[in-house]
Every structure is written in C-alpha cells, then in structure tokens.
Image (cartoon, rainbow, N blue to C red; front, side):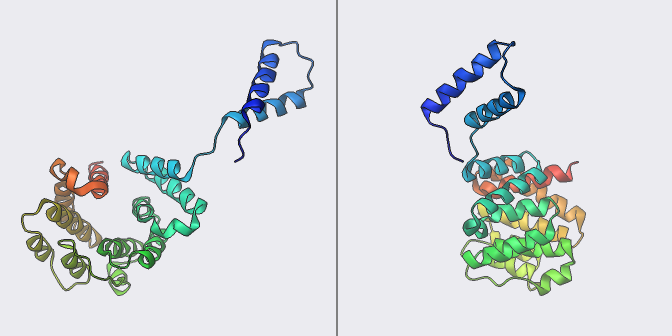
Length: 230
C-alpha cells in the first residue's frame, strides 16, 4: 500500500478538521464521503507479513484456532514462495479441523525440510483425522536423518515398527527428549482413539517443567491440553 507523504497527511488532517469543526459545511455529501475515506486510508497502514504471522501465533496461543489458521493463510498468500516454510500453519490447520489443507502444507514442507521427523508425524496426524490411521500409515512421508532424540524412534512408532514405550525409553532422562516423547506419544495415541492414554501424555508434555526446552511445541502442547480440558 502506498503511503501518503508527510505534506499530504498534514493537508488531509487540516481539511478533515475543517469539516468536523463546521457542521454547516456546504460540501456536497459525495465529496465529504470521499474526503473521509481518504483520511482513513491515509492513517491506516496495512500489516506486514511478519506482523500478520506474529498475530497468527498469538491467536494460536490464545486458542483462537480458526483465526490463527486464517492469519497464516494470509501470510502464505502474501509470500507464496515462502509458504512451504510455514509448518506453524500446518499445525494451526490441524487444530482448526482443516485436515486436507493441513496435509498439503506438510507435503510442501517436505520439499524444504526433508529431514524433519515432526513434519512426517504431523502429516500422519492430518491424514489420520481426515481419513483414517490406516490411510495415514500408507501415506507416511519419508524422512532423512534427524539427529534429535528421540526423533528416529518417534518416526518408527508412527511407521508401526516401534512402540510408544520404545520412544520413552530412547528419550532417557533428557528433559527435551522426554518432552518430545510425551508430546508425540500423546498425539499418536489420540490418532488411534486411545483418549485416556493421549490425555495423560499431553498433560505431561504441557507441564511447566518443559516450557523452556519445548519452545513453540510446548505452546502447542498447552493449547492441546486446554482443548482436552474443555
């Protein structure tokens, strides 16, 4: 959006104040409407993609899931070349119930981040909710080496070759690894309808002890916990 110059703003302000102060103004109604519209346009600045992104994150954190997804949609439309990077959008779409859009987001993210186990896991979750766990297993995205513990075991769990207990054992006593183990064990249980086991794991992942090590994903766990608590 083109911005008015400082001189234009000053002139617009003076004209607007003249109209406001003189209720007997003989300006034609059409001109007054145009003047007011121009005045509003002068002082209202379009949000940047970064500002829209930040608001989408804030909306997600506050549980405004549909609004968050729409905000991330706006970022993707504004910067289509960067849209595949928006894994945060995929997560928001999942919680907003837009599972097909969620699936496509994580499929596009694979092209720019092929070694991210979490991308494959969320793709599985989108397909499982939109179709079935069996369809999700068949569509499981390939993944390259992810050195974070216990990401390899998490991928093997989603592929059906390891158990949730294997994931927890691989995490050991490392706080960050245990956070991811609890989060993805919970999401995995939920995908298969094991609601009590899912609830237990999500509540563990959302615990304050993991806030620092979990970062953005801890926020996701907290949002999920709050949804389960409703």
